[in-house]
Length: 335
Length: 282
Image (cartoon, rainbow over all chains, first blue to last red; front, side):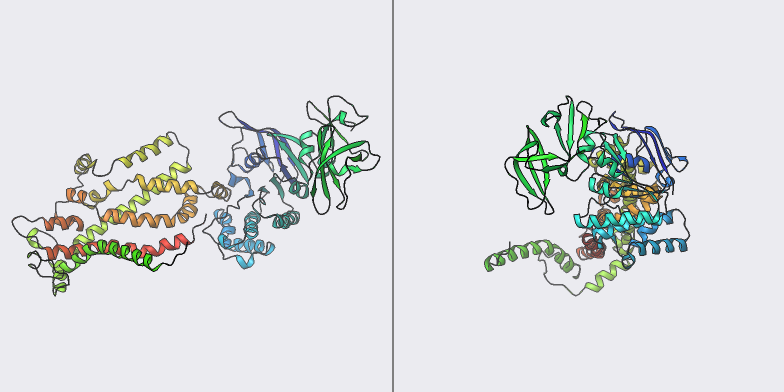
């Protein structure tokens, strides 16, 4: 167990392409930090630099008290869970779990104890002698986690570990990862492009875009006070509406983008906004009404049996407006 | 598409039967010839049924051989062929899997050049470089040795290329997981790459064993002493007698014996093939 510190970490590929730049991050001991962003934002590269699978071209990474820039992955005392699990196909589950320990010359009795314990924890005991191909996706995922757990490492690194599972199983495994991490109190860094996963799992989120950190904060901070237009549009299960300020009556502030979450727009007969409805998406628990206000595309969450009138009058929930500088995309204070 | 038309079925079977007959007939003739006496094949009428001399012909080949043409007994030649074919196939696999490992998993200067040089040798089969190779082997004093028989045939671009393609299909995450699990390069090779290449190794072994076993021109050149004759080259020497009729019944008995070991290898390895095909998943 250890804290992980990133100091101005960057990655420039030999061709001159910059993948990651100037990341400062302090992960506390036992904390669960999620790196989230769209594909190509550098989140995986950052994780792989922490793991030691990519060289670090700028800055330093420390795990515990050591700077690990020049230490091999095996020497960094971390364990990694890969997206495609990366189980050794020719080894049984037991051998898969034990391989890392065997390479570290752990005594056989200790290996057996840890493997059994991990298998019990992950309910893998009946499958210990099977080969990975005889397991279902969820079970393979568990083996991959087990391989990390038996090592009792300073930190877990997860690289989109749930992307290959179907939606239902993903929810279950998400919960399992969370409880397991709490129980073991091991520092964890988790990479995902799925903002729901990020919100539910992380103690803190690191939102990345184009190789740079957009915002670091707890899920609620990031959700309630997005630091930039990018974060505002990325976090939230239905993306935030981002409109020019002059669309909203009485709020003509030039050079300002206004963000309002779809659930913060309320249908009301005397609302100040008037929306041309263009379509309705049924979500079961609610409906998502798409439309146009003043030439800007907007969506609104309404109750499931609500039938929108044409045009639909809307009011904004008080204090639910986020103001951003249109030029820089950064949050304006006082919003 | 499932069709059941009797006429078509009949036709298909007929074509197949003709095909089988064309392939099997020479083997049958060879077998029949090996069971007849010395003169039955000289008359010009080829018998179609086995004769009474089977045991006699084969036991003669195993005990004395055709001493008139300076041939050792068949056992010795079979042994020589086996040694040669095994050294070639095992040597080829060992060398090519290691060079493919180096080319795929290590960054070293001129890596791609090394690969293309290996690849270019595909264009140089034994026959093309046979004279310079003979010179080299002769200068090294390897004529009439097992080393001389097998070493020049060991380096193999085909197998290197095959293993390279196989290694390229291995997911990178597997390598990375092994690195995190603390496996060094050779440990990774031994614990992960080698077991995962098992079925490919088996397939290559069969192909290379047959390739080595069937070598004809090269053994004919480098072996002049009869205790190093291989069986395939031996058959040629046996049939090639001066001022006499070739003893076809004995030549054919030898030919049949020469066919058996590769056949055995194929039959035995077949099971590993099928197993490999069934459980292929990476």
